[in-house]
Length: 170
Image (cartoon, rainbow, N blue to C red; front, side, top):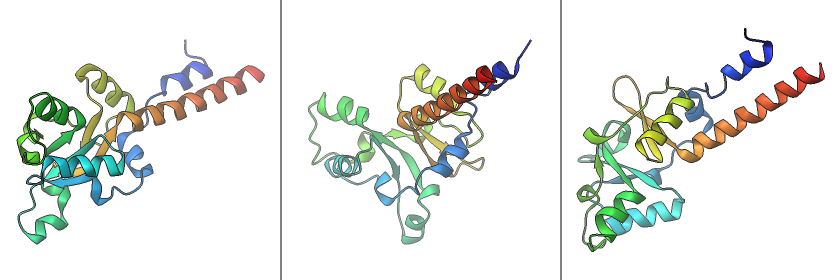
């Protein structure tokens, strides 16, 4: 039988990805790069922004560049760089992002309706730290990182502890 306290616990991890994205600051230009950019320049963008991945877009034409959410062709992560450039001895000054990125067809994505717990389980199961979020029509809605997931889970955990303290104290 569920008590008031355990009913509260069942909801832990239920924050929706869409809610998480709304709470994040608007994603600036540095979270995107063009597929023909040299890897060294993409790494510099990632370093400057203190992020571990960039969505890769194919911007052929000014109109497409204004709608980057619809021009996504893949993702480039720190792990892509390490495994496909550093370990293989490739030159990051002459290698294009499109040569090392993970293409859209190979990406695992979530929707705004997925829970943060769903994303956390997916990240653990698939061993990755960044998950693109797509709307039902396939348009990019944003990116969720392991940092985002941990932040939400900590917030929910603190709220749960507060509710349990209130319950115990009457």
